[in-house]
Amino acid sequence: MRTSRPVLGSLLLSAALSGPAFAQQPPAPHGPSATTSSGVQAGATPDSFTLQLKAQAVVLDVVVTNAKGEIVTNLGKDDFQVLEDKVPQVIRTLDSPASHAPAKDIPIHSTAELDRLEPNAPVTLIVLDEINTPFGDEAFARDSLKKFLDRQGETLQQPTLLGAVDLTHFMLLHDYTTSRQDILSALDHHFAAYPWHMDGASWKADQFNASFASLIEIAEATRGHSGHKSLIWVGRGFPPFDPTTLPEQFNEGLKQVIESCTDALTDARVALYTLDPAGISMAPEEVDADGFVGDPFGGQIDFNVMAEATGGHAFFGRNDVDKLIAASARDGAGFYTLTYAPAVARTDAKEFRSIRVVMKDPSLHAATRQGYYSRGVSASGPAKVVLKGQNRQIFDLGLAAQSVLVYDAVHIDVQRVAGPSGQFRLVLNSADLAWHEAGARKLDAKITVIAETFDSKGNALDLTSKLSTLQVGEASVPNTPDSATVSLFDNIPTKPSATRIRFVVRDETNRKIGAVNFDLNGVNKGTR
Image (tube, rainbow, N blue to C red; front, side, top):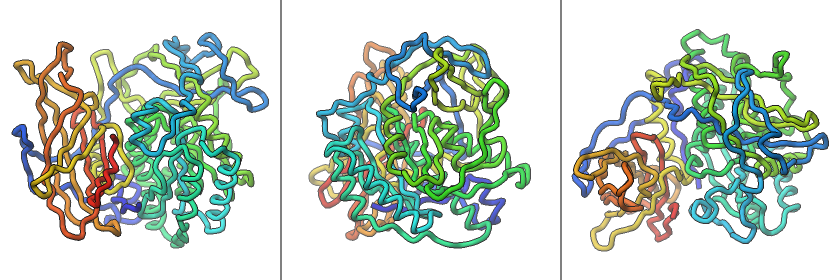
């Protein structure tokens, strides 16, 4: 399936490189306002993007290898030391790699089955980059992926998703599956596109938009699955550039977008591995005498810097891409998860906080993300950083509506109502929503609901949106609904040419997004 990606108008780099014509905003959700069956009032989507850090606990996924590069899985809490900005931290919890291992006898064939049967399993997402990767390298990447698959058994060790991305589309070639043959078949049926060859600033801005929009899409879509994700990006991404050459106002806006994208990936437990078989290795990272890396985006911006920042790795100029794919997937299954609370609270917003994990045994090496961006957390509660004028909320909704990935942060089951034409029942998991006291043992949750119809070629037809308030009874536990699910009804006008409806639900408090595809020919591609 194929989807048109909305322009990431919030990236100020686009405006700096190619002028106002490129920096257009994605269309805001439109359509008639409505009320749900519970008497919900519609409203407008806010105009600014707010980042919130709600807890002072830091979660790290750490891969430990020995001098031979082999994964080490039998360590305890005392074998690790965590330093944040060179200050030792107290490790609260440590989960071993064995606690993440998926059951080998449970077949997975969709995101729905993954979340229901293996909610904590590590997964692998393989993305073929057709944005700026030469056609010969694309062919080499496909052959390498087949070599990797040929070495696997009929059942893959981890649920694996296969996708491809070009300048305007993210293509879901196959949803999560443990079947090797499913991935091979999807690969054989996908014909790689010739990359566009253009010159100039506008072309670079398009590449930047396509790469970062895809990363944000993947982060938001996989946010609901609590397992670790190894995102293996085969290709070049966007070309490197020096942000200091941009006007100061553009440079600052660009940094904020990059920081929010990096945090979105790490919050979703996505480690990015970039594999460029024809690329040239970048200069080694600058570290101080104690081995700490500063802000990874403080100098030249390179797509591969994202990999190191998220705890993954960047590989260049290698002919054994199939082995690198295997190693990246192996890392995703052989990690420890540890948590700590920062010993020193910070109130300075946009401060990069460096993390380093040191092993008691000096012959062992620990790999994890380089740090995170402080959002001004203080003892008084969560702090906010508002990206003025960025319109990120509208972009995220537009991206979810145009995507074909299942977003599982809010689980949705779509049911067609018998009788009235165009009426659908959406069943949501109550635990995915943020509930607020509404008096008389009642709870409210505010959500945005978008429904967009498409024809068989993926062309968008009609879109409706509304802001709704759901109300349920309260259980004996405060702020907890008395039912596991909550339902609402939606009337969706459909043209005769419509073959699919994309339903998107976003909680307006916690910003979680759920999105599913409903096949009007009778197949519901939902999360349940």
